[in-house]
Length: 488
Image 1 (cartoon, rainbow, N blue to C red):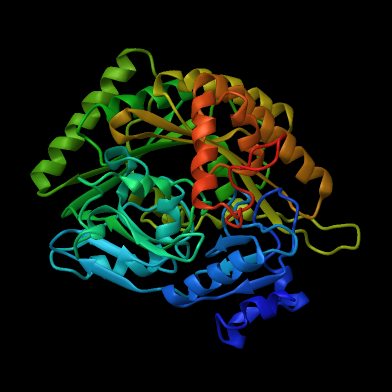
Image 2 (cartoon, rainbow, N blue to C red):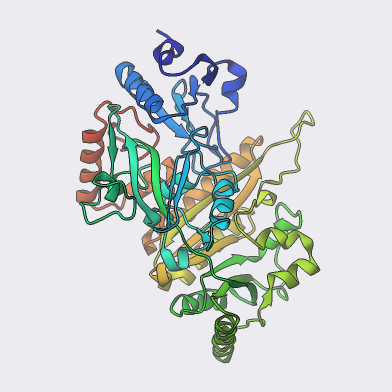
């Protein structure tokens, strides 16, 4: 029996794709992962339809891969050859409880859709936005435990979830958090916190169809500032000091190649020693102009103390000043925003056809005290491979851990460039894993390396949980699979 017959009773025919030309568009993501064409793509619009799909897949042992926009850079939405993709982009219900500051969202709700709904409230609310395109999924980012521009204060996006509604691998439905026992989605406790069974599991334990997400009051006044740092050590120390203070809502750093890519240089060359190595961006807010002014004054004092210690830091300037000098920087003025300049790949193949832009990264969370050591390890690896050392970093949850992410762009149509990106990623992750930097949105290749240093008890428990929840092994076949011995 073919896949269309397996799922025919689950959806209307118009929401099932299995023709060759349509399937080609679902074969890969932005990364160096090799394409793998699925056998069918399904577009549910309601929870009951997701349940029907999962039951049908369980019966016929069809592997399911969940997708929303396909813009992930970890190969997580690439299905095994001939498998089924469940595209949740048409599930777009959104409810906001302004009194409790909770947004309850389905997977198809995007950052671009959520933001205006929060801003039109009185008083307005806000959420932290990732550096991913506005059309990407709020819930998917939270479930993958990513980061946003309020992560300095509130941690990774997985922490923002108050509970989830999930279709389990047998087709049954379960809620977690306070919504398991009430109509309220206000918190994950005080019940046993089973929400974690679905955060960072990459849909290996079920398909989340709804989730509660914390949102916060929007301050009346905000300034987004940039501080140019002559060397990365000064930038890292600035971010650590800001994390330990109450000056900023957000702080992060970008190394010099990112700015050059914004100006259309896809593979920036060597840095001029006179140029800053890093720029730190800082969001300072206040409920009153006086509060904002006091925090800006404290920022000036913090930077002055760092300069006295020998760090080369320029005085802060506002995003408005930067945009006046160069309008292309306007995309940094507010989030969510599209960093499409990272996908610019102007090359052509042997026939003269344009090559597609590729983007890949090693994204990690790790100890802030070892940030310099980690950067010292990865920069030579990237430079030796011919990549400009494009680094993104930020302190998380008051500085209790940090992000270290290394970006690489390449031309997807060039097999040699794909191979080089794959090899460089493995070297970069291998260099920082011993320092405690662990991959988030963990791609399959990174999981292979991570397994080598896992606590044996943790590895055994992980396998037991997955086997208990998904005994048929149909969910997210590329995620968290044990290598070498088969099974999960």
